[in-house]
Length: 75
Image 1 (spheres, rainbow, N blue to C red):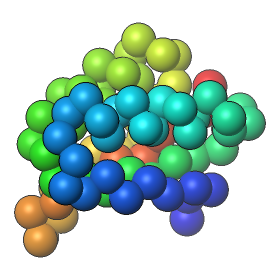
Image 2 (image 1 turned 90 degrees about the vertical axis):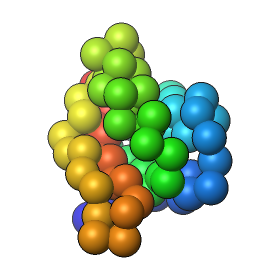
Image 3 (image 1 turned 45 degrees about the vertical axis):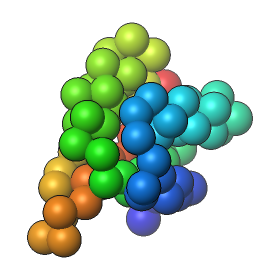
Image 4 (image 1 turned 135 degrees about the vertical axis):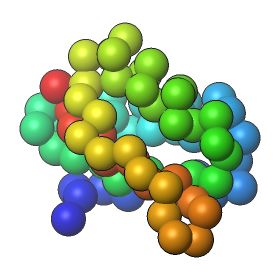
C-alpha cells in the first residue's frame, strides 16, 4: 500500500506529472505515491520524470479498465 495516492484520471499531460511532482517534494525519503491516470502519455512522462528527478518508478501498468497506475518512491 502506498503512503499517498493521487487520482489524476481525466487530466491530460503534463498535469498528472506536475501534481505528482508537487506531492513528491513534500514526501519523506522512501515514501511511495500511487498515481491513477487515464492519459496514455503519462506512461512516457512518468518514466522521464523518474529519471530526471532521481525518484524511482517502482511500477507502471495498464489496468484491465484501461487506466494507468504508477507507483513512485521518493529518493
